[in-house]
Length: 227
Image (cartoon, rainbow, N blue to C red; front, side, top):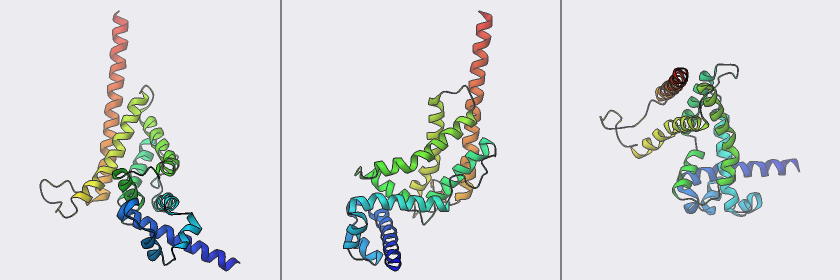
């Protein structure tokens, strides 16, 4: 019985690995059960047995790929929770950029194809898995900005940071055959260097927002005294 359970677990993992690869390459609609089964070295019936069908496999394959990526690139980026907020945010930014640019990453490209050709089948699983990371980012941005800033500014900063992390990966996909030494190329091949740039750029931007907020408060207080 134990051997059977181990075989079943291995088959399930093989199917998840194969499915995440095929869905990342082709998207949901163009992926086939036959190709996934063949790549996993399993029979077609195994997908129905373990997942109930292609729809459920799609969500579980994304979840599996996401969790494997998170294991490889923990969200804290190796920065201790006792470190200052700016360092913790820097760790998270670096972890995100490394994760989505890892050649073994699958969940980012499954998500990308889902956005381009939506099925709605990943909405629930993505929200469940990504929400804690989103909350972490918002909390760190809020802490770095300090008190006095609106939730709208916090959200804008968090959105800007996520955009800086994600967009170059898509640009690299579009310009993958171009030489990054060309003057008009936006390719980013130095991922570590780019991660440091995003950290510096993001923190400098938030400091500017802090300074503007402090200046606005100071001007408001002066105006109140003059009245």
